[in-house]
Length: 147
Image 1 (cartoon, rainbow, N blue to C red):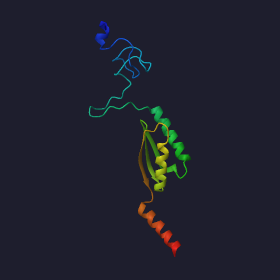
Image 2: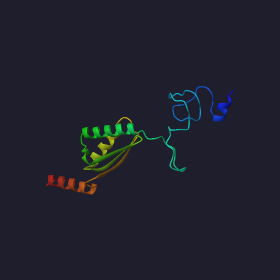
Image 3: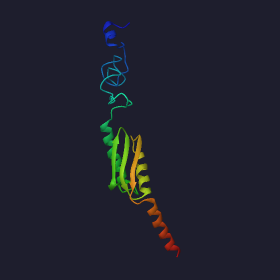
């Protein structure tokens, strides 16, 4: 039976779920080592009621992902990372800027996708040489070899 204090707080006695931070909800030591429950500092509140709930960004984790993506792009064969900008938010990597070829764009995206902690990669890379020009160049090169 709950005591008067717990009834007033709207909490339940005994071990709780915790781990999310805050001071309301289930009481007791939680699985995350924190007493508290569903309300409190562990959540990012939406700016307005029409936005979906999402967890607060872990900027320390995002910074590490950013650094790992930059390092791997620099080490990747066939990728020139000098014109590639990397941004990370909640494990979602955005690659933007310009690359020389389609192959380089594909290699950059594939490299970023393989970094631990990356949930998704948004490809906003532009190719410096449009496909039509690239094909025209390859055709003229091939035709000169045939003649």
